[in-house]
Image 1 (cartoon, rainbow, N blue to C red):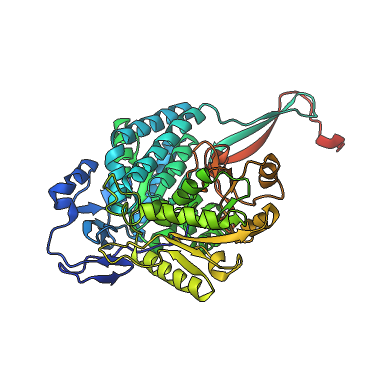
Image 2 (cartoon, rainbow, N blue to C red):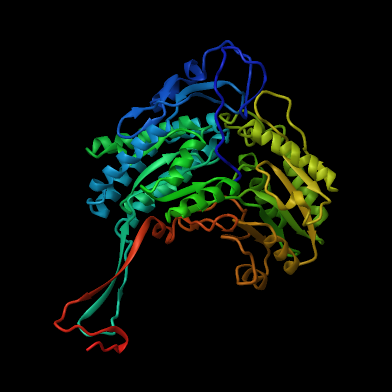
Length: 543
């Protein structure tokens, strides 16, 4: 995910001219913040107010910079947040470390019961929290609600996991000996999540980490602090109801200084980072310097391959959703469309037509149920979009749809399709976190697979075909080198039951389902001698 430690803009004057301020566009307005408007009074049902403390460690505090969260759909201020200072972070890390002493003693199934209650509390606030995400992040309402549902689903999964994760009993070569594999919690861990999935990514980490016996210190994106606060209020209510330390799930709003402190902090046995490859590399090197554990979910330059026997009635809606859903700001967004020469012209024509049915008619306010296409999250995204479109043209591409910034309040750009570029053009090989789709013409599956694999990232990939041989080549050792390898479905929209993550510059981390829980625990091989003799392994004699 091409996201770093973006700083949220400050509201430095009551009247602001249209422009750019620390990556957030603002607009002249004498009106109060959105939370004070009757239209948005529902925000208060999430425990939010016009001024919010941005640190939770069993109590709410915050002594850092006062920032203002802005709505990307209209540039208006939502509410203020007092971020955490580095001293606040240290207090939170200490509190989480202390809380672990109690949390680790609770049997795993009982920890699962707490997570079950968190899931139920999220269910009660699902619509409100999803709407907040639409307001602050910018994704459309159905996607905002769907993301909250992901957190609910992973809570359900974690409840079952709390009675199922286990080690092995291994046969010993020595008489009266047992080899037992034990999994134990790490302790306090850190989660640094990104603006594009401000609920689900934390949820994947939080629910699994909790049932495994860890406490969590969370730093959400600086531009979605209200989501972080609202989620933490929901969780803290469950912990308080069960007379448990709130610091089990601590949270610190802040920017790069907080992320740097987490990466360096030996109290955090694991740091899970979701963001750009560039920042992720720095986090990984810093954590490795102290021999900590790191879980990375980074960039994705994902391809959809359409072969000569593909069902185009499936291809067109799949590509359209994968390429412009969340305005191209998913880590799994389709950025390259590799089409067999037999269908190339028809696919370009049909996908272009599908885009035309969404833009401009279905572009608008993310909270409007009719909207399918919302804004980019920040001015930084708009700037990257503009640069990549210009680079694509300069490198020989032709814009067949979109390509412009939309002249309206907010960070809206046209969903864009570019043809005519070489598969290895520089702009094609780099990830742009915006709704730009590069369409490439291929002669067959072997060439298409090689193009799929030539980018640095290795997150998601998709093949459309009805050929069984092609399917097994695609998922086999010489097929896609991504962590997510799909057939006849989009690159985006992963389910929580499988491990989510990617290879190469995507970082190699795995979250959510399957055996991703192992990343949140430490493994010990225990040899137990229950006899009276002391034989050595491999028949060694020391007499």
